[in-house]
Length: 135
Image: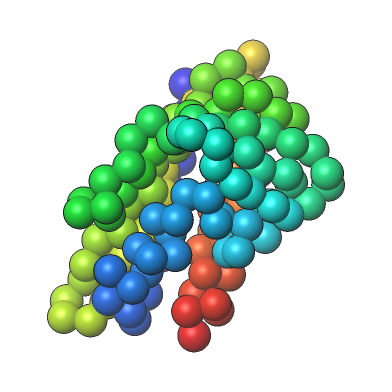
């Protein structure tokens, strides 16, 4: 089982950042690897920029706590298990920190290591893009 965690600090209040991050249907706006996204019930449908579709189930969503978790159902990544959680925490009076973590399993440790690198890069680039969008 592999685990990753990426954090990013923002000079914006947590509630402001959560308006972007907490919109589980609208992640294509700030995740560069995703071309489009929408929700059908608790299932998020995404299309990656290479045209590959994937489905993820939103398993928990807490606006008051500014967190949600989702699990990968199917798509192009060779995952046997994947659960990810994103949290927006306040920092000081006007700042915030996003913590995005995942726990997953693939067919082998080698595949897991490659996915850990790729997913970490996606998370980091997404949070950098979010920082640009927030200004």
